[in-house]
Image (cartoon, rainbow, N blue to C red; front, side):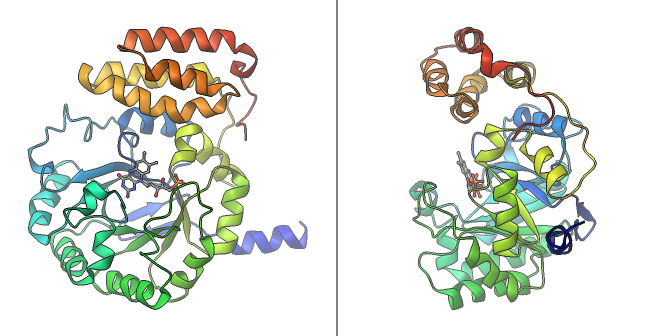
Length: 346
Ligand SMILES: Cc1cc2nc3c(=O)[nH]c(=O)nc-3n(C[C@H](O)[C@H](O)[C@H](O)COP(=O)(O)O)c2cc1C
């Protein structure tokens, strides 16, 4: 083994243990509205390599009345685990009932959304607005800690501006109030996804924390994963869009970066797409299917050189049948790229 390989080996983080939850490998699916749901999660599980799955953000106010059998936010099949449920709230008053519901859903972990920059979310004081109101955030974490023995995490951004003292103070508060782990999306509140992530900022946070710190933002390949770990010094990685484009990316990173024992298997893009469609049809009510297929296709289409054509055709479809037919025609016309790749492709 070369010196370089040895150094990487030593620097590479290992499984994360928080309370009774082992995250192995330390690779996490990001919560993503309209995307991090059962149909996509089960495809990722099929490829392997995900240490912790996630739901999308769940309104703590509405959650208690959701029916887990039919709610597209709560549907979960066997094998989809461990699964963290993300709560969105602006007040500690909603935490108790929401957590009772998560216990009933057999959640494996609870995450608190403190990073969503959407104006619709910010307007009622939730998401990234909580980083501007640390006392409210403190009450929310403290109440969540009081209400559950499950592993508790918070997902944040870097804050509204470069102020590392303020950021570190916020993170220390989360730890003091009982958070078991934090995830940092390495962008300031108002920075768009197109901007390069600021992984080095995570290293500053990591230096002063005693709980695991997960790095998130802009990881689309095993090379990105290696670089992010090196620059951030994080204990683990969370992937969002990269995992929607390539649901097998966790398997690839687990194998090449963390040395996990993952069996290589062929990836045939039309089959991955078909499995997603089948999952939607078998488990989701008709009104919840097409929107989710469009959302997924928007990202999955990036596997193709002319993927914008696939995305546009599905986007303008009026029914699942039409979307399916159009996608099928696209795959047939782009046979070269649809051929099975041997092993887990990059
Ligand atoms: C469509 C979409 C929906 C998202 N929804 C959520 C959400 O529900 N909760 C959350 O904390 N972050 C949400 N995010 C942010 C992601 O969790 C993640 O922080 C961000 O996409 C950066 O990671 P990536 O570069 O790996 O995609 C969303 C992102 C996208 C693209």
